[in-house]
Length: 403
Image 1 (cartoon, rainbow, N blue to C red):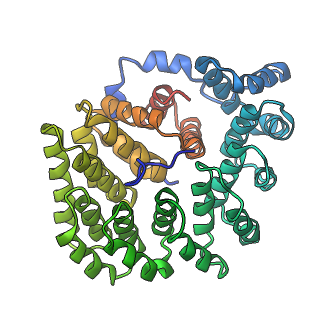
Image 2: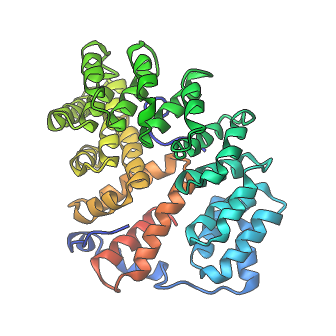
């Protein structure tokens, strides 16, 4: 599972206004025909067929199978998914079944995740680690610590680190995470640093400062992480860094200072201006990617004006601007769904905004995070009155994001 948008790699819903429903009035009838208004009950054979088709090579067939499963009531579908995770001969089917299982909020999911921690299937282990990041359990900490010395799969290890960062209140975890900031390839160290910031591991501040002061590929990640920690001492560190950092790193530093609550409006304006300049002037790809990532980090923290700026620049953009901006807005959707749904409900260019998000989803491989977002959208869709702006928005998202 690739990490979401980052420097080194690339729910209470607010009342929705009527503008978005009008934006999609031309397609509302076809969308209504595509999406049932309530969960559907397939026959046992139909459900088993859908589970088996999760591993087909043809994307349309896999997607249709996933839709059938998501629309099936939990009492019927959860046992089928649990059996698939445990018994199916196709490893990819087991993986997809485990991901889909997370969308039903069933208590038996945790047991399946515990068992998957020791699976020889890399994908299952990655899903289990990501699940325990979102559902931290101190009793699992010893198993995760043990796995840190044996987990060698490149795309799995970052998920393990993030699961441990979510358990940083456990005393035994802290020194291990500090150790991991200094060893291994930069890719692995970057994952540790990003996780420290995302989980506000303030105990890591003293370990991160020297990394921020070294000229190298980890400076951008570290500047953002220091900002996310919220430690007031970070202001001096980042202010000094802003004076010495390269132009490619300055947007990350500016975002970090904003996250610390210092002169946020001016630093946000710097990011918006940098992104707008790079959009209009070719040859500034590093600044473009950095400013998009910085605005994404601010939006994830809850700053709606940063997300609005990404949409304003990104909706009518083309590559090379479009790819990093679509990744940025998709990351916001996965990490701050309420902010994203509120922004989409108020957007005057709703169709263009959703298209931008959909393009970012296509580039990201965060299947578990996508499934969490899908679950929120579908639950909201079923709970909303027919014909309401809220239901129309959810219906459109379901259609455009292909779930």
